[in-house]
Length: 243
Image (tube, rainbow, N blue to C red; front, side, top):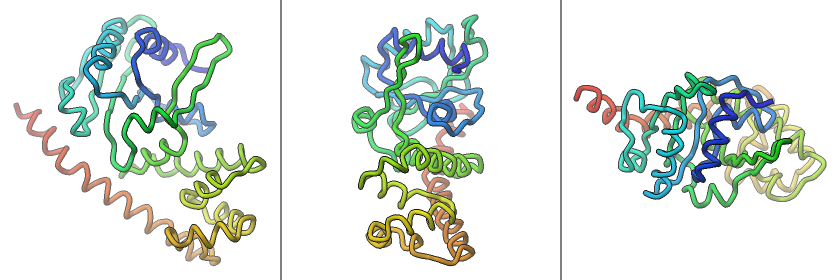
């Protein structure tokens, strides 16, 4: 069941025809990897007409920009998130964060083409970032994101393990984050495991302790890459705060 404040935000985005994809913790709920979040996060198309539609939606939600940066296409194209706080009676206090560019994540046109569309029982339609793209977006330096990636991968495997195709098998091989799931995949799909090992050698590690250590090292590399990506953006935010 979608909480009413989130439903209100989504319905207003839909009525204003904002080209946006739900991501973050709320999208994880849709994919069966529940995560409590007080925020609603969106990937958006950073084009003038769409940003005007977004501002109409924010006006209907009685929302204001909080903190820095201000709402501006330049900041969105740089990779900054813009944060809004809603004061509408049906979404009071809900924070809405929008981003147009993320480290390692495809551009919006590709994200939109790969999106997941879900229709609620009342006919409401929700556009979500695809699960593979959501997994990529979750590869951050934040501690809470890595357990969520594990849950997303496990939920996706359980949902589709009896309906496999080469794309899904490759996705599982490249993104699974537990020794148990990787061992299961290696046993079920040995040929695909050998192919995946060219890009991700750890899938062939049979010792669970060694594999666990390799997964931790892989995670640390991604965390460090994310830290380096955000370093100049954080400096920009600090400069804005000082002004």
